[in-house]
Image (cartoon, rainbow, N blue to C red):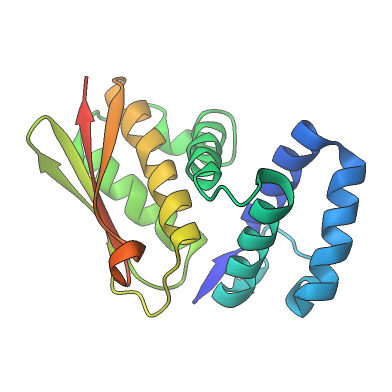
Length: 185
């Protein structure tokens, strides 16, 4: 599995805004030493292996967030907010119908842009929606949290309502994928 390099620019922006450019430079130097795949230039079009992506996420969380992996949900959520309102995918949301078909088509399309493996599905559920990622060969909590955080924001943007997430299954059960329910209010 490979992840599109757009995550790298987003994480850099987030880290430099919160911790400063010098902190990012120190982190990037350590990253290049620990994960050889990052010794090359990472552009938005780069393909980063799942192993390198996971190593990046783990090092970033250890370095800046005291190991609190839940911060990755917020990063996914914020990434979707930017990408779909003022970023490169804003046109996908403008004029979109509001409902399951829009959520499902958006998430399938965006998953395919960011990842070259797996399937992202959306389902109507009582009072909201369920999102699921499956058909994966590689899985990690960092992929679960960022993808579901992203999906969380997509649901809120499409429905214009607040969504409360509840985990159904995922990495903790050793699954190669995850499923979450989002109740609207």
